[in-house]
Image (cartoon, rainbow, N blue to C red; front, side):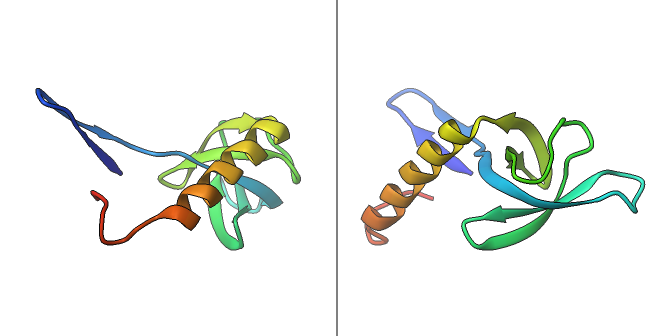
Length: 94
């Protein structure tokens, strides 16, 4: 979650993270996938998104929101890498 402060208002914004589907588990009542988020693998519900292994999805709070085109996903992941490389832990708002 990010907090954005301006002179007059404070807004709270949630962040969806792109990840790549590695495999799909259909043994549960909900369609679940193992998704790779930059080397971290998480189980994500993809019940409401048409996606297959190799596809990129946007996930928030354990749920896939939408499928992404691979070029868009890679560009977003590169932006996150740039942000992480330039993050100064002594000078940011959480």
